[in-house]
Length: 257
Image 1 (tube, rainbow, N blue to C red):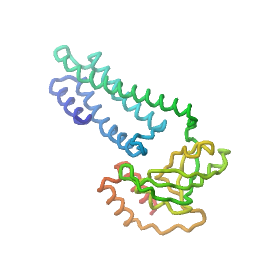
Image 2: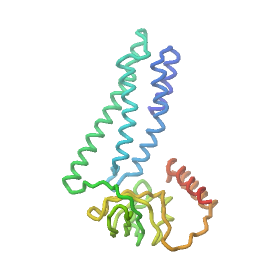
Image 3: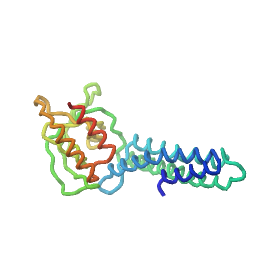
Image 4: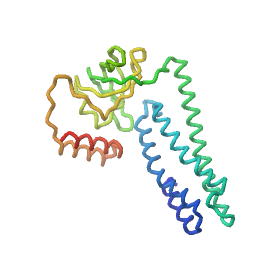
């Protein structure tokens, strides 16, 4: 049962039994349900060729925070019987079970992330992408594979770190799963904002697909806003663009007016 649906049921039980603790924790589950669903979609979009999410520190931290927000209050209500009278104290096991599951998943995820980070350190992939940069397309080639129905491309890139970083520009060939909304910005010379690790680990980067950069010195093409919005709507209806991507891209297109 989805968390939001369980929250509605729990809140209704709390109201019927006049148990404020159950009602409050049910409302919390209703609020967290859509947020956790969106986080799950983000993880799906980050899956690599092996089918596993390529999780960065920010995504891990936000996911862990969500599990804590779900688990800690649930356990407190259940264990301490907050807002639950002795007459209906058997209902406390519902938030206890949810709290234990949430904290268990959060702790397990933390252990797996720490293990992966330790393995990365041993194999030499320990530098996180933290250097602001602009990546520019030299060429793009289809690999014939798709991840979550998104094309997997081989990109030849020129990486231009911000001058203040003190990191020199470099070139790299990188495999990347590209969102459909970014395919129109893969022309030679165009690029995207990104965070990179530097030339010592050239493929370690976090590309901001929603922040395209036009080719240097090229006149800006007229923006066909209705056509771009129609194409975005089509991709969204087809399930190839998530709700989060849809909102961000729609805002960016309207901002070009």
